[in-house]
Amino acid sequence: MSDKIYLIACSKELESMGIDRLRKHVEGMEETTVNLDWSRARLVPVVADERIHFEAGEVQIVSIRPIKLEPYSMVVPSFYGVNGMGHLLCIGSLTFRHFSEERVADKAQFRSHIRASVLKGDLLGQVLIVPGKRA
Figure (cartoon, one colour):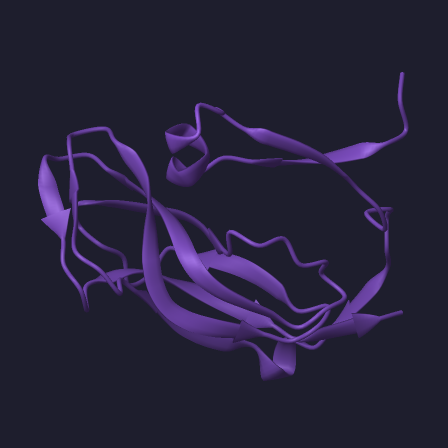
């Protein structure tokens, strides 16, 4: 059993090169204690920044309006203010950044339960961003 932790990346760009995923060893993913400041949590809308068509049950990565994440901040999904055609699964970036670094989420994973299109400017859902610092 290996103690190494691996990052798995999947994207349409990799598929176009004939690769289904990229597996890369990452450092610094050990358990870390953080102090979260819930008194400064922000409720942030996740808004599509492109038009993309979905088949019923399909999951796709959608470009979103960028959301700045401070180092050690946590992202918590909100079940209020959602898109009626499906569910926001997560937000992030196609470039891995460690949680101790400043990050920008510019992609979201979205699952539609109907055959329809997400349009630029559509609300996909909302997230709580809770600032934190290393304990």
